[in-house]
Image (cartoon, one colour):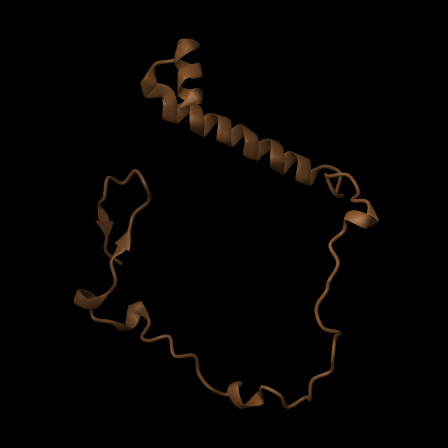
Length: 106
């Protein structure tokens, strides 16, 4: 709520709240993309070795080559594809936020 109060104190009408949010979020995303694209290296500084996480589980082991092969040939049971269903049974596709609840039919 503080951001809304700050925007109101700065003279922005309440109706502009969503636009201010979208604008500020877009600027943040663009800045992040520019940072990532720039140097081609890690943005954050190096982590000192004592702070790096250490694996504390069981030691690695070799598994037999045929382990799990009994499940490789089974098809995944996902049910019928939506395009295989009659039009009256096809799942409803919902629009994007801002479509005011209008449902699109596929």
